[in-house]
Length: 318
Image: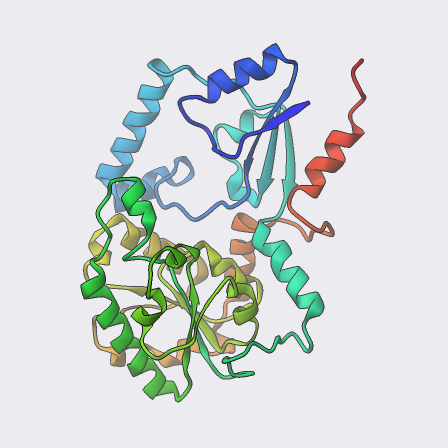
């Protein structure tokens, strides 16, 4: 028997592990969607340099956990995707099993059914469009659940975003298509926030196939254009640059060597030459894929298949 912990390490982890030991069950943790974090143990000096206050807070919380909270035991198994899923805790696991992110398998499934690596979606051009991968930056219900204020106010964010899209469409003579964040489903009229544009939920992988280039702030769905080796434009704002999210955008841009632009600044400052296929850095995209998506080509059908193979290979205890 086993317990697969989908919540992640927290203050109740040790209690869950103690129950597992009582019933002779394996405790399994996973990190299937690692994401670039500029503030980490692996980038300690870079963290201090770029975000000293946040880095010190993180160190303080780590020390606090060591002496105040019940320290978790090493996991029996850690299911991991990408080399950056290896952290101080998953490294203590008795067994480490490597797979790929869920998005990797989703894209593989879609590509198998696509014709010439393209899928026809009603309302979307066969080719020749710009894809915006939405972060639900201004209206996510996560802010409500966590009692946090939105990063930017919707009344300020969406008018600026729409104007930016209009300028892009005028410049490139192709439409912007919106891959809406799932959280947007919770808000009535969310699609209208993007103006008279095609807005689709649950279609990010499909839309990534045929786009000329993709844009996002810091969505984890950036994995799709990375896997497809599409040019990527990261979007910021003058306000966002001052917050931790701005630091994350800078870090992702440095990893992929892709351009970024503040949507509330002059689009003429954007170097358009960096948004064609020849501008994609194969070495940077490959390194990103190995760190945050998968470090090897997987022949499995879903991220949990390697785990199931391992568990079924274990001797049955009587």
